[in-house]
Structures are given as structure tokens and as C-alpha cells.
Image (cartoon, rainbow, N blue to C red; front, side, top):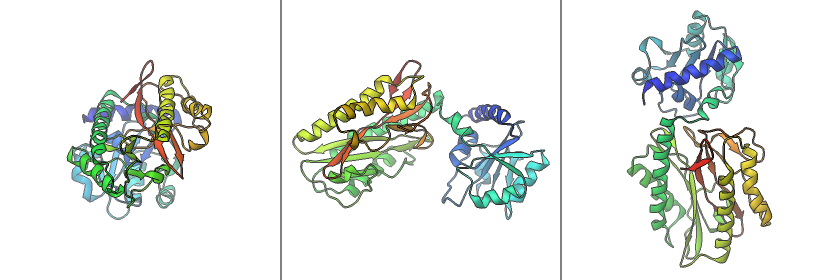
Length: 356
């Protein structure tokens, strides 16, 4: 990716920093750090970070990392503004910033551990600055949409392939492994999230873990999966019937789910509230007397992360804008029988939306 893209994004963030009266923002969320700098390495555990990025209102930005990641940082960042910490990163970070006149440092409350907060707060004034970067990420640019189209296209190919692997006698675990192998063998960097496979009644668990349950003849199989390609994630769900002909209940439930999905897609456009999108799907289920089986929101944003703003749900705030990418994934679930969910990703356009 052209590093000019990252510089442009940081300039947009500076405007938000000035509006908030912040000297700088400490970016500790790995996805936000990548979005603003292109720097990304393996953050193996929740207590480990390959680096912090500081974006300043005056344009003096700095990347802090440890010796393992210096060479990677130099590929995307000016060497003079890379700072390598060894023993006490807090003294290095705060000393560097204070030496440049930074007095008030914004931080991401959802992505900074209390341990780190306490040690920073004893050295520099911290102010919560939630969702500043996420508000930029919520609108995808042309390059991001190109990457997401490629990721979702591979997801479509996966479902064409995986349907041929659904046979009586195979387990959820085996299907999950088929999914992962297909993605990796066809260029994906990794799974977007752990694949969900639910056979029969297990499909009533919206986030079912693949187990040793065996597919039987004349049974449904729900698969929710996605891949990461060129840094961006896809997320789709399909529900299949294994057998000669779907049961009447399967066909009836599938018709309701697809109808609810289409009702939402038909009205998604700029200016629509996120709640209104949810309500369009809910109304279809409510009219059919099955709304109690719709147990989750309608969808969520997708991009560098699989789940990111906005949310399409009963409790959601916000209004849809061009460039937003969201899932539309209504489902109906009965623990005694199973569940059906069908998920598309759509991008909000100037006058409606496009199914990706």
C-alpha cells in the first residue's frame, strides 16, 4: 500500500485532535496503528504489543517499538522518528513527548491496559479519546473497497467449494478444516475469525464451535466464516441442506430469513438510521410471528476488523453514510431444531447500497 495513504489519514486525524484540544493521541489499538502507519506485526497476546504510535496535532508523529520490530518499522516509517524501548518504555515514551512539548495525551480507553495507564498517568496528563480513529475507519476509501471486494470474492468461492464437501458422515471439525485449507491455499493471509459450523440443532447457537457432531442425511448445516486478504476481512454466512430435498420447515424458514434480509437491503441508503435497518428485517419476522427467534442484531461493520462500527441493532445509534460497509445477517433459531442465517456484506453507496 502507498505510504501516502497513511499520511493522508493522519492529517485527517489531526483535525479531530485539534477539535478535541489534544496535543497528541497514543494509538495502542493494533488495527488503528496499522490504519495510520502501515506498521503491523504479530501482537501475540493481549499483554503484548509490537508498538505504540503517537500522532501529534502539530504533525510531529512518532513510532515506539522494541528491538524485534525495528527493521519492519523502517519499511514504513521515517527512521528518525522510530524510538526503540528496552527496559522502561514508559520513561522513553513520556520523556520523548514531553521533550517535544506534549502536555495532554489522548488515549484509547478500549485498548490501553490499566497497568500501562497507571504508569503513563504518573508521568504525563492523559485524556480519554474514544473512537477518534474508528470514526475515520468507518468510511472506506476506494483502495479499501477494492481490497474488501477481493476478500469477499474469495469468500464467495469458498462457499461454492464447501457445499461440495457437505456429506453425511463428515463432522463439523472436518468442515471447519476444509474452510481454513481452502482460504490459505487460495491466497488468504488467515481466517478473519474462527469458523462457525453448526449441524442440526447446533445451528441454533449463533456462534457454534465446530465439534465432532456428524452430518446426517436430510439435515441442515450453518457455516459462518471469512478470510483476511490484503489486510481486510470478509464475513459471510450460508445455511445448506444436506439431502435429496429440503424439508418444508427449512424452506419456510429460509424464505423468511431471505425475505427479512432483502427488506433491509432494499432500504439501506445514506441517511437511514442503523435502527431503521434493523427494524426493516425485524418487521418481516414479527409479521410471521417468529420475531422471538431472531436473537441478535442485524449486522455490523467490517474492515480491518471483523466486528467494527457501525452496528445495525435495536440499540444502535448513528446514521448510514456512503462508504460504510456492513453485514446484513438476519437469522431464526430454534434449539430443538436448528437455525438458519444468511449473511451478505453491503457497501452504502450514494443512493442505496451494493451487495459485495
